[in-house]
Amino acid sequence: MNTKYQPIKIRVTSAGQSVKVSANTNMLFAEVRGLRVSISDDRHHFASTIGLRIDEEEIFPDEYETKLLFCNQSAKINEYFEFDQDEFVNAADSKVEIKYVDGGFTDGVTFPYDAVLYLKLKNPPTVKKPNQCCE
Image 1 (cartoon, helix red, strand yellow):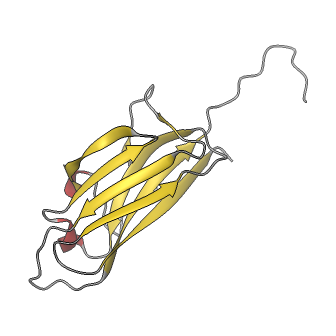
Image 2 (cartoon, rainbow, N blue to C red):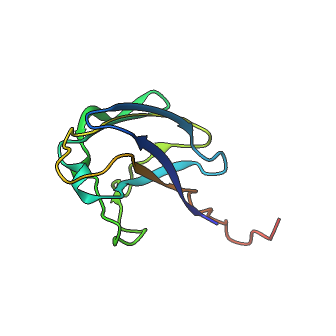
């Protein structure tokens, strides 16, 4: 298997709450090639922000708006924010640090809710040399 979609759940219990989550990427995959944010109620993404660091490298600053990475519940799993073809972030058991801040709206929305950051993990394709036999 060359691709895995790794979910990281962020539980939000109140309006305006700031939540920090740490996790590690799956050690069997070498690269993070894309991501998306899924929120159970589309209205929660308004004014909500997310900061993301992987292996101490800033991917998104703390005030990055989730609506720019947002996919609603009907989006297919492969409809992700994809990094450029030659760009990736090292994975392989890398530390992931997330800071999520709820937008603070309470009109018609319910708490608690889950925001889920999905990381698209991949292994680079292996290229066999001509006349290379199976190992």
